[in-house]
Length: 254
Image 1 (cartoon, rainbow, N blue to C red):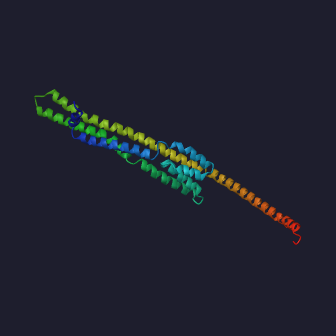
Image 2 (cartoon, one colour):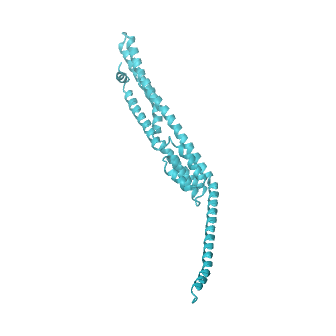
Image 3 (spheres, rainbow, N blue to C red):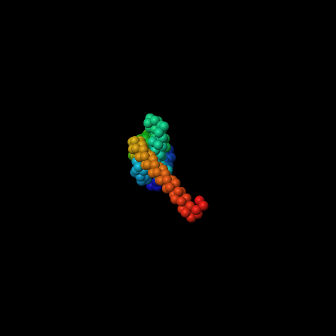
């Protein structure tokens, strides 16, 4: 039998299931594009590099590394880095800002995810509804036949009714699989965002020590430059009398 014949024999519920299947496929394709565009699949490549640069106190290089990467993980790391670099922000304000940005990114990743959950829940129910409607129609035909009951008529109505149940499961099973797969991926992103933000906040004390060491090195370098300038000035001052005595020897009139 032609698949299109199965579709028509399933009744009006099949049209609703068909529309749900189109919506489910559209959501899955959109989420795949959304995650690819957000750089979710290659987010582990830059994290260790950026953390090492932050640990070494090279904030400008770490910022450049994170600026070249797209996605929520790089964004939350930039926010955490800005919070750590700003000494005027309290610890509570830093955590609140990081939580705000992280929650906004997670909400973006979770968009349309409820649609898949809806399909997974109502797909089997719609299939059951179509089956019940088909069974009612089959029993109505059986009653109309009266004493001339044809078992094939009743059997044909039953298998046609169960087409809706099969269609509902076909629509719901991929939807629920995609829902749990996408939800697991979002949970991994959420966990990574939490981990990297805690790492950067925990490096604040070490970052402060690196800053002090860098300032100390700069102070020593400036002191050495000042000493070199003073030595050159003394050498220049000491060479002036020698020049004057030389001129006097060459010209007695001096």
